[in-house]
Length: 309
Image (cartoon, rainbow, N blue to C red; front, side, top):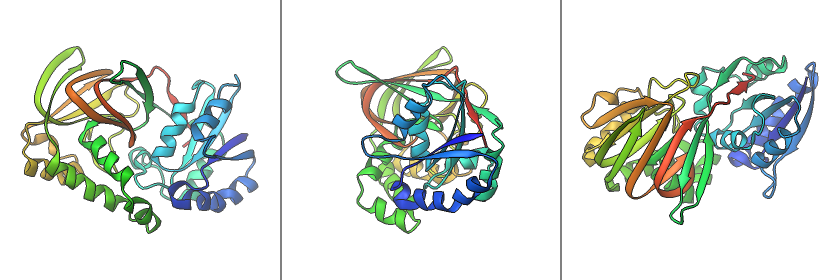
């Protein structure tokens, strides 16, 4: 078995490269061959995956990084049918690991991959983002796509000078908590029309709309506790008409998935979701902020991600 190992040497404040150095002996001693590929500014993980999976042959990828790096990878895969996918986590959230119940021990995780067999198949989501000039951007996601609160929080986090500092000390989640609380108290509700499963509803004071493929996002928040990455559908959580204190109280409840009983919190499930807002709202896929839009759609792709773990 031959593996294409992709790593961003500066990813996760250098932790991605250290992780590779720790697991390299396992690949060297295993019954396999491998090629190590390091990403660069002009040739990132997404570009590498696109090149490697467009050759019309079987390819086994192993990507080292956090949820953002996995997002780059899934956006680069051209041929899902011929691609086997493994990953070694080292980011802040690692929600895919948490949701799939994968071992926290990295050596055990690598040994699972070395036999080259597909252990499971995972759905992949796709966001269609309409820009203000009428152009369209399409981005895939593994975990979730948020409109409103979650994306606004990620935007503040990505601009924060504290993020790289806290990441170096293993405190990356702290900056998300700080910014999330700030957004909870400052967010303005918006009128949003959502079509889900053929039914259209108008939410006049919407603060958040989270479409989830996995049941965890943001380092453990279970906005959609029943989301299943293999059921061919997206779960949707909507927060509408909540006061700022209620919105703050929703977050600790969401850590255990107990928020759905709150007044003003709604859930839906469908293969395709469309949202139209009266004003541009922040949107992200797997924590990667796309920008602001008045019109987005999310759906499950027909192709599955063939997992080595």
